[in-house]
Image 1 (tube, one colour):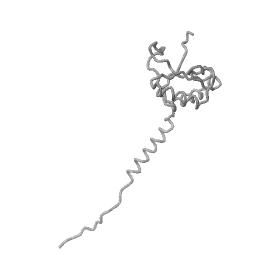
Image 2 (cartoon, one colour):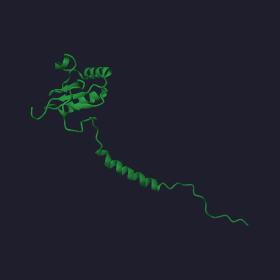
Image 3 (spheres, helix red, strand yellow):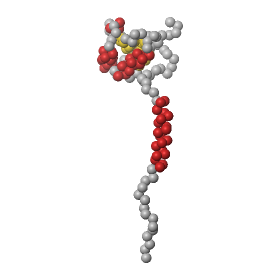
Image 4 (cartoon, one colour):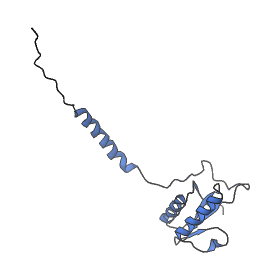
Length: 140
């Protein structure tokens, strides 16, 4: 005689361990989310600041004055302010001709920090791979 067991097979998935793991991940993401900040990627030198060497290419200097106006030292137009889209177009054109042209930002000492960031984002959107920052030596 054949005897059947009284137990039936259970076709349910125990999701309690998955809920525990998900709650731990939720807590981790809630703690780390405020620590993540957005920024502009800038490749700064890893050594003491030195002047550009004589044999390096002439850099493209994008400037911002104390009033937040943008300038670019292209030809004779370095004394007249440019609109952001004009500056981006000129930088794209220069990088199309010579993609190895170094780009540096020259900001007035009294300029609003937001204006410098806007200029750097504008250059990044124009295709500049890395941006240098111009400074004056403390002796001068």
